[in-house]
Image 1: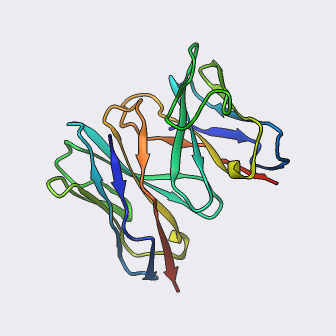
Image 2: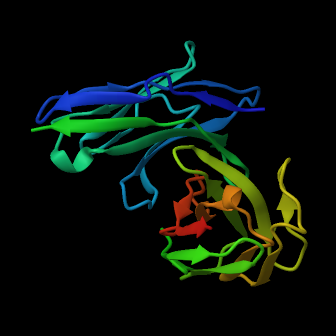
Length: 115
Length: 116
């Protein structure tokens, strides 16, 4: 079974500052993928970034980077230069690498960007 | 990537009625997934729908309550049957498009149901 833990129910960040959203995971699968999704108040789920368990380098996508520490089983999301539009729920998720399998989501972190 | 359209986007339903949610994808996909997100909660997988076979339901979800159809590789429906206020949720359709397959899920915009 796979499990995602997000210990921060809510976070505040000043506009233009960087923020780290925490995520730890547990899995018995040797190969897996880690994802972050953003859910604005409108409800849609927006894919942000992916990290494969065998990827040597941390994933980056624009202002998003994933701080992957395999030994610690953590996959924190770093958002640089926060913008007001970043205010949303953020979900960390884990799935089997190679897709076509169930993806398990964490409980989410609500991020609020302060002007 | 994939573009996924869901209908209805939102609805208000009466207790005891049933509602069918449609999910249309702009490309052929092998598997489609239905998730439920109860208010203030995370996403929970209801079932996985393959074309031409019965859907696979997760623990806690049964076919009589959430019947699913998957008539072709671009379309699926989820019915929420005999609704109660506890079924008030956002229901999301998702797919994993073709290779290179990272397992990334693409989501529809969701169907927000309120049961009175």
